[in-house]
Image (cartoon, rainbow, N blue to C red; front, side, top):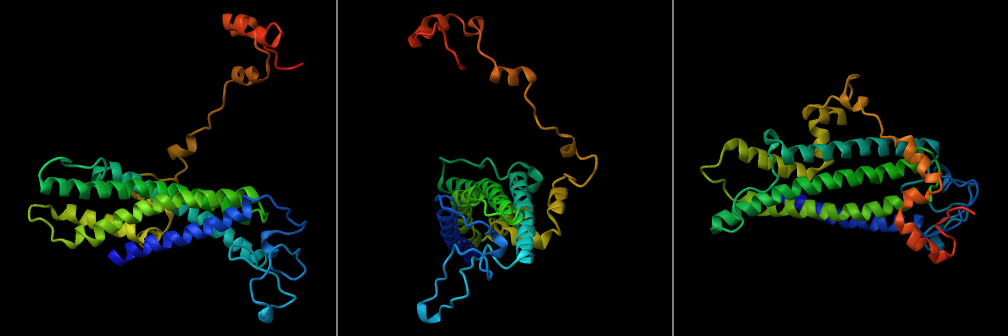
Length: 297
């Protein structure tokens, strides 16, 4: 567990590097050659935009540069699309699980931290452990949501087979932000697995409480892979928390998006009246010499 938590911190550095590459590729304005799409990058006859990084003696004239996230034909693009959608669903489920364990007493209720922050040495140590478990839950929820957004951005590229620069830029920026949450998650897990959980449990602690805490640390260290070993699908994760998203009568399916009243929509295009602006219009409208603010000529 300790080694896994340290490895998660190192893995986060790799995500920072990938995100920086995405920002460089998507956030910097550039002309995309006509006919170039994610599926045909690196294919023979496709417009050339990327260059191979092999040295001149090892380079080949007919081959273009490929990227790990693009190229390989329609089949590879469809595979990327499926991975993006599935990954987004799994990370959303992970976020829900972290929120559940933070507030549900049956799942650990890790937040808010319990104990006394300013007390004896034993009380402060117990509070620090409780605070670390709460940090795992909160940072894990944030990381889950941010990673879901990360893969949703990539889905706009792979599923539409379009070099959407805004989506690539968004994925890069989101990746950098999610890396900060990942550092908080892995750092808290490292503190728990490399120090606190190495100590023998107090004799007066409940066995089920110790088991829950160890499970939370294992989940934090393994992440999505641990979820996939425990559950067969993201839907099973939500069902374990009491939400059956597949049921036709699920509350989520009855939720309607909020639509602004028609009066608000009309107010966006109508000229403001003197009565609606009040006395302030009489005093400040003459600044422009128009007798009142006018939006259209």
